[in-house]
Structures are given as structure tokens and as C-alpha cells.
Amino acid sequence: MNAVIIVAGGKGLRMGGDIPKQFLPIGGKPILMHTIDRFLQYDASMEVVLVLPESQQEYWHSLCEQYQFSQPYTLANGGEARFHSVKNGLAKVSPDATLIGVHDGVRPFVSLDTIRAAYEEAERSEAVVPVIDVVETVRHIRGEKESETVPRSDYKLVQTPQVFSASLLRKAYHQPYTEFFTDDASVVERFGHPVTLVSGNRENIKITTPFDLTIANALVKTSAN
Image (cartoon, rainbow, N blue to C red; front, side, top):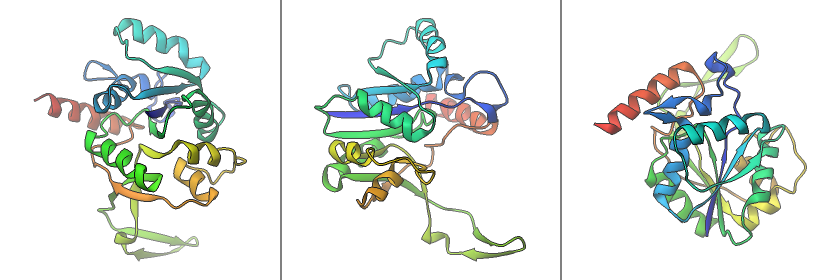
């Protein structure tokens, strides 16, 4: 059985509003509902664990009633940092799960091909991250006034879902937290396991700013046509 932990702990500060970004509507329903739907479109039997701050859970339940959202999921409490939130989500995943993905709740446009590639490769290599190419020039800052162009082919932009064998991810998350754990791949790499890259999709944006929301609404309209 496959599982996914969907982490949605944002406060929406960069959106400039009071509503957390994962609850903002696009295409007629909140972003987070689109995200959950996408994984169940890929695999209707997928176990979904949703991680939300306790302070946001009552509002989420009211949204589910308002939008008649009845997709199955298990709720876990958010933690101090992403690391702790994922760890709380892991505690809720069934022991029968063989592969566990971790996905940002505000990435509703992950393609089914990206999800499929990540889970299928994880069956072989146990630790997988979807990435896309860097298309703009990249400069490395050296000190206050110096910088240099670096080969963009040496770099990739990381997306989610990051997918791992269940046993590997559980063991990796027994490590003590450090500030260098910026995503799940960094946790697994610190544990000593290499990470395999697969192709992501450029539409798989993380919605964090008003500009991102504008792009998201355009993507919804495009997919509806």
C-alpha cells in the first residue's frame, strides 16, 4: 500500500491576508482540496495523512462541510518545523504502507506522471525527488560585492512529492532535528542514503505569494478549457 503525507502548515504571511494560503480558493474550491484530489486520482486506495496546525483544524472542517469534501484522510497535528510536522504525520501512517510520499499542500498542480514516476522509482531506489531544470542564469554570491555566474546545468529545482521506502523514512526521522533539514531528502541524505532524481513538471508550483495565486488561477482556467 502507498501513502502520502500532505503537509499544510503555512500561515499565508506572504499572501498578505488572514486566511492561510492552503485554504484560498482556486477553481471553485480550496487549494488543499485540489492537492488531496490529485493523489487520489492517481491511486484511489492511496492512504492520505493531512498535517495541519491544531489552530487551523476547526476552520478546515468547516470548509469540508461548506464544499462537501468527503475524500478519506487521516489528520495529524502540525509541529514547530516541517521536520516535526512530517514526523507527526509518519506516526499516523499505517504500518502496512510500503512507500510514503511527502508533498506540499500548496502544490495542487503536480501531474499524475510526476507522481507515478516518483512512486515507481522509489520501488527501486527507495529515495526519490522530482526536479526540473533551472532555465535562468544563476550567480553565486561571494562576499558583499563579488559574485560569479555558475553553470545552471549543475543545478536543479526540487519539487514534491518526495517518495521513500516506508522503513527508510521512519528510520531517518529518528535522527535529532537540525536546521539543515529543509526537506525530506535532506533528512534521508543525512541518514546516509542517496537520493535519486526523476523529472517533475513545471506547473507543479508552490503557491506562496499573490503572484503564484494569479498563476494558479490561470492554470485552473487552462485545464478547464
